[in-house]
Image (tube, rainbow, N blue to C red; front, side):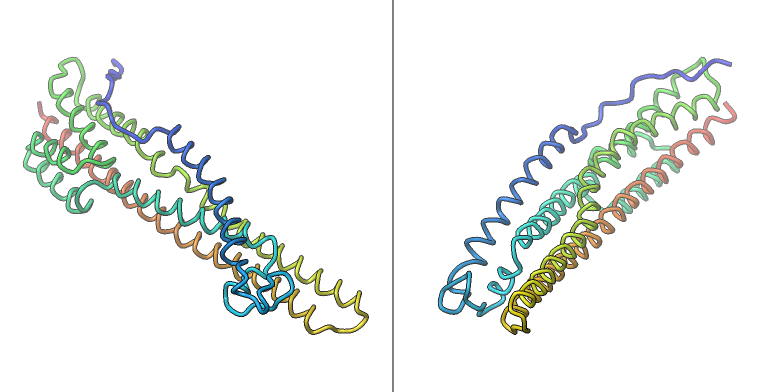
Length: 278
């Protein structure tokens, strides 16, 4: 039995991995620098402390209390900025991948055209929709047309060739959607761990102040405990936001993947049903 031909699939526009990698490479140090500047010039502004002294004065507002959290605060703040920036970037990329209209509506339109045997209308609908889902489906429809003209293969080989083409097109599109999600997933863990590290440092300072004074100094203890709690709060908040955003994006990607699988199955089944007896 002859093997199915491996003709090149239609060109698909994808986000270049190098561009995405460059974005991540630039974003991380920029977020760190911005967090340090916010910590020094905004949170550490003299107006947030009694007597205008950020070093010895007690904080008078929320900004001052965060600044008293210590040197790990800008580190955790940089994590939070990274989550925000990468989340915005993923929203934009996944939004483009979804296309110009609702994916579910688009899939239903394509399936209705397939059921009517109108392949040209289904392809035209892909041109209007655009995005990763439409690109993959259009690639499958192009292969559909190629297999209709193929005379050397049987129906099973043709349907296998269409299915393989859809899988290859999917493998080109889907990795782009998952770019930078590993960074958000990593921030889930290191946000909490860095916050706990700040807590440990704060408690070490608290016991060191207690040992140095020989008696419980309420000012020294409260400052150290405040440092511990600020880092804990920031770390947990960063991790919580990271978890929510990661789950949102994976859910969106799963929805797009399901739409591709569902429509791809319809294309293969339509071809098999319309050519089985030919």
